[in-house]
Image (cartoon, rainbow, N blue to C red; front, side, top):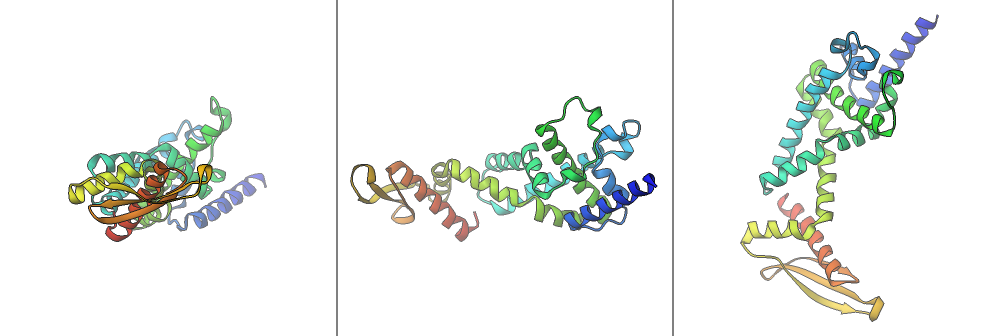
Length: 242
């Protein structure tokens, strides 16, 4: 009776996991393998754990991410593309995606066979399984279904990471774009100031030659300039798909 219940529970778990992934597997043993850590099958890990599927999935994800960056940011330099790719195709990013997807409850791991198990271990497992799942989908369903999964589950991270880069140094990013476009440096100009002492506000515009690209308002000229650069980047991205 216990063995039957275990089989039923495993089947129920795979049903729920397929629903979570929005993929119905032909060979469900591939999906089972994709969520099985080698601690559960040390004698047969090559065939029964996710290790080799993880290897395949990592390569597939990297290829799709690189293509997406190339198509989405045609004016970015090779160095900028490499930086963005390395941030997206990283353990930290994959762990976050795996946690957000809710993969951890489906991972088979023998904690007793691990040296330590903590939050970092949980993140690492989620990252590994995310890659393995992509590899399993590719083998079971073909490249187009795997691509569709990567598009909906992983590629949104590219935009998130790119926004973080823009938030960190919007003026530097805008300077590179304007230099590439016109050979000129963007100029920042205080358009308006209001208030007194601690309540003072500055309105700053950023210009390419005589064309205003964006404006920002803040309690300091420096921060208003950052806001103006950020708005300019957003407007340029919408207009030119930067």
